[in-house]
Length: 322
Ligand SMILES: NC(=O)c1ccc[n+]([C@@H]2O[C@H](COP(=O)([O-])OP(=O)(O)OC[C@H]3O[C@@H](n4cnc5c(N)ncnc54)[C@H](OP(=O)(O)O)[C@@H]3O)[C@@H](O)[C@H]2O)c1
Image 1 (spheres, helix red, strand yellow):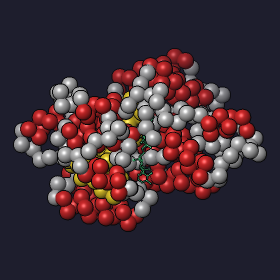
Image 2 (cartoon, rainbow, N blue to C red):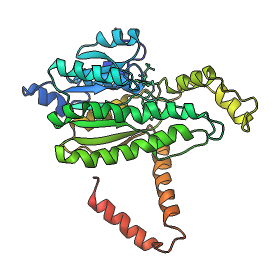
Image 3 (cartoon, rainbow, N blue to C red):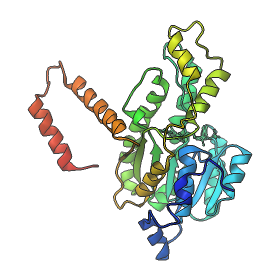
Image 4 (cartoon, helix red, strand yellow):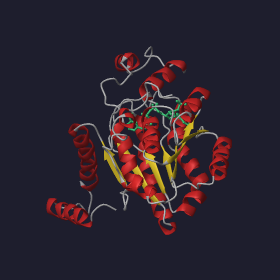
């Protein structure tokens, strides 16, 4: 049964042939059905991506945690739900066994499960920072490590849901943006290490899309007793705890799902795929990267001139994406 969380594209676009891709062709030519594991497939980006890939003919192992979510995912064609909490080594080990037993190998791993912890750094409890990193950083690390032998066997792909928050930083977003910055380094180091084995590594950098992430964030803050009372940031925290968190103002994450499909079917997958709903979000992200470049260059013995920086940019553009 498909629920209200079902992304629009999986219902309308793909079956109408609007987004035909080489994935279908590959399978139509008699190649094996490629298997992909999506962590955090119960809602938001993961759910939308699992549905899209399944409708495109991939076999999707969809990671989820609750019985209700597992049952819902199991009801979708080409989807096998897998109980998978990315903080649980036992569940990760069991998921590897399930995938091995499936006999399809594993072509793609999508490290998507994630949470947001949003609070002022000087008032944040250390255990909450640990929780943020446990899911968003140690999660992809643990799952990738466990599935690496299968991915190397298939010369497959590792994709992680990063964020423009891997580049853009905002007040009270310290824990979340720190975790997404770590995902950037994780991706680059892993890519270098897996190149010799033919495994490609990419990170998707979504902007703001509709999902459960902020309502889960606020509920968690309230459950853990965060309150504006006594805070140095009383007014702003009051606003944060009261703001609408349904993200109704944002688009469904269909284009993020499409970008995962693109990354899985590109002949030469890019290292980074930014996917944002508006030019503003693209601009903010690129400007953040440029601002850091300028800060890094400024006021040190080997500062490069404007012309030299422009020359470096031209060289980088000429070299093309990695
Ligand atoms: N939405 C955006 O605007 C946006 C933008 C940039 C990046 N992202 C990233 O996109 C990814 C998906 O988030 P979303 O926005 O789609 O939010 P979401 O709707 O809240 O989905 C998060 C998913 O992660 C799962 N999850 C949470 N903790 C987990 C754990 N310990 N083990 C396994 N799964 C766990 C959730 O499962 P349960 O239902 O069981 O909790 C859910 O399936 C995250 O990495 C997020 O940082 C989102």
